[in-house]
Length: 225
Image (cartoon, rainbow, N blue to C red; front, side, top):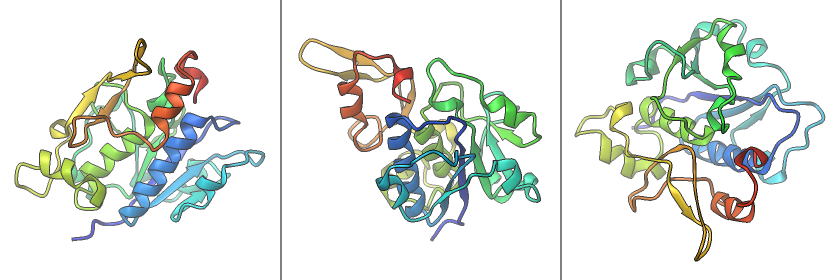
């Protein structure tokens, strides 16, 4: 069964694109394409040069307009993933929403409430649980709940948390919180986020992310975004 196509939107509010965000966006774009859906980067500056490996991914839309402009006539079909929302995301939301919007707060450490501006524009919100996630993890979790049959690469997770039904509950997804990453023989660093756990018990991360973190281990996480 192929899951119903959805659109996943990240409102890119920064004038630049750091290496961390670039890897996250590449992961979101690739996984979204696998689920026969669309990934849109909105509010992208006209002066921002995106890397070729991101531009060339099928199913990626680059929009210079804001999400409010793009979906002015479909605002009631947009779900804002918001840690301050009154209720959590569930499978039933697949029938209510076609567009899932991420405001950028999810990948910051410490979190900056850049979702507040979108919240004030009247988008309906849903929470993804109590622990801070990276943006690609938030998109991954949203797809698992909303498109539980739509991503072959996450089949293990679907089987692990579905309890024999076709639905994936938010609190049944296997997570790993604040994993420790070994930099070298003498040094390790703790990642301040929640990740989905793979079948080897490791956090699912974008390709190249571990190397990036090791390369920049002396910097704060804020320097990587």
